[in-house]
Length: 544
Image 1 (cartoon, rainbow, N blue to C red):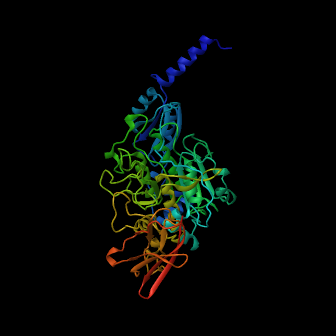
Image 2 (cartoon, rainbow, N blue to C red):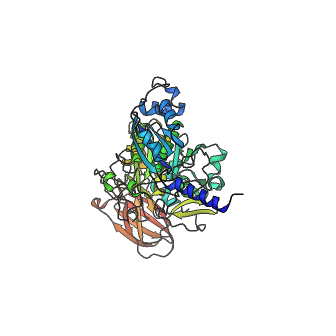
Image 3 (tube, rainbow, N blue to C red):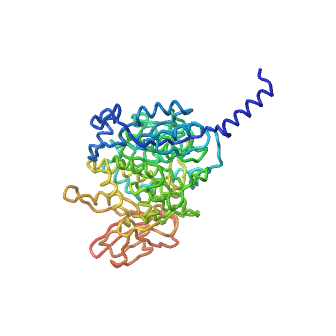
């Protein structure tokens, strides 16, 4: 038995090692050079998987030095000096390690070391971190008493129902989701098909390095995944047939820059599996160690290491879809990294009124670019996080995966598109692509507008389908997306055939979306009729 005095001594000694002059912290060691050693760009099959090479062939991308691994000689030298090597990143030509300052002083003296960066205190140091500043309004959801499902509104905004009718559900497209955890995914019925059909093709935990288990830690990633791949009668997401890669990169117990490196390592892993789209519902600006904080001037897409990594991912032909940030109501207000990268699709959030959600971060970036790029519904989003049933959550974390799902369906429909072409197609499909601003960017993307935006010589052209939002209607503001240009009048008719309201329009008044105030009408079923002299089109509207 160890005496009590001996126990106290061991405890004090442990505290000294952890927090004193020999503290074990986490560092990134960046190297000057990348000796080819055992590998060569002339032998790509030794460097990348077949799936990764196929994507590069589609994109006509040549391999470069970032595809070469960190030199074996560097790895051997570092392993002999540090307490633990967490991983090496070939995109950054760096190693992420646990070491004390004495070891790091030695490493800094080596001629092949460019710089060392403190990226995480600890391990073992906890914080009072408040996570991703997610705006959460989780609530129980009752089954609706009418056939209109709660998720229809968010899907119809993006044209997901028509995309599914056309047979595009993300099949053949590989989507990675980076988040804090995917607790309950293996027990939620909406994900059952992913397991039965072998759709989850890769899992990795880059916080608990070496672990492949990801169905743990947090339900934030569960919610994001559900907006891409859920498929049951309570939520049909846009890309439920996509192949899925799940990576934990966010440490919920602390907030340090190591999470940015985790993200980049996850992107390398996803790249090796041939990923097409990365969805990242994460954003960084402030950390538990204030010396690591970014300033607004750093949001230029070239400073934050995660933004640099996101741009490298894009250079490999990967479409990176990321949340724009939930800083709109805070003093920061603007984007967080990696949304500031010019190479990613940064997605903001809108409310049921199709206006910017108050919490959604705004542009511009530090160098004056428009952000967000696009927006999707983000207030009270219907999603799966818990085994008890769907719930509602808010945040740009949950608008971004909806756009990622739309992108997967569009890529299935247009498999020959390069990533940059798909990104441009999505931006051009925004409802205010001709008049972007710093609140909602280029607007709400839409499947049908994107399909119409393709080369008309090689693709069929069809009329855009009119959509009413919200439907069911709970207030008095009705929005019409894809308003028929030939219509010069709108009538609201009761189920009994009585005229309730009508509006006459001129061409100068046409906008997308159009807004109508219907007044205090009784609950029930109505018909919205668009008309001109010799033409009429009718749509059902339910008033709650």
